[in-house]
Length: 107
Image (cartoon, rainbow, N blue to C red; front, side):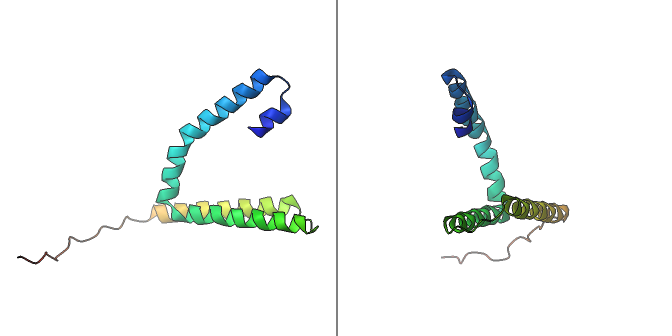
């Protein structure tokens, strides 16, 4: 959304870009939220990305430049490994629990 404001010169284009972006976010939020709820490792991956970006920003604030390519590579590699993990876990047979033998006490 900020990119649309920075790149476009006409206000109508900025408004259209923001409305379209908000619409796409609203449509994608439920499926993405459901996906993250089904796969908690994705939540941990996102939190680790926030940590990585936060550390890079702190380093930049301390005049220690970290090339963006290193950060992008680390993030891309992590996503690739997580995709492999999700695929490997999805290929296995689902776990079926046995019915419970426990019965509540009679009063």
